[in-house]
Image (cartoon, rainbow, N blue to C red):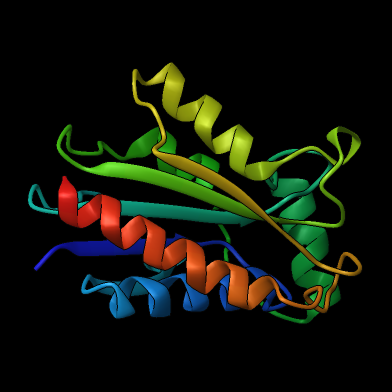
Amino acid sequence: MATALIIVESYYGNTRAIAEAVAAGLIEGGVDAQVIGVDQAPSALPADLDLLVLGAPTHNRGLPTAATRAKAREQAGTSESSRGIGEWLETTAIPASTAVAAFDTVVSRGWLSGSAAKAIAKALRRQGRETSSVRSFVVKASRGPLAGGEETGARTWGRELAVSASDG
């Protein structure tokens, strides 16, 4: 059975909800999938991991920074995610055999809104890696809620990723 790990950075719960929906789609597609927060992400990934999915909210047109994380934690009243996906990527080696996909939550899908998922893909390219798939999911406002149909779309994307993971 193929295995997938979804590492998510989330402050208001919207990005985490998308990660859970992606995991549900992966599981429906026959992939053993687990979702963990970036603070619990391992510093070394198992060599037999088939798929790594990274997710983050879009802050200031890209990945969250220390400053935007602090502001989001304050507004959300949480201490979750003291480090972000960007910092985790800088310190973690991803096995060559592991496919990587990225997603984000955004207020709109226009080029003006930017994309944390595209920033993840760019960071991976700097490491010589390509992402197999990049997706954005819309929230109605910076704190959410998710736009209608986005969790269903994430579940569908998870099933699509499962086909790729199983074929790999």
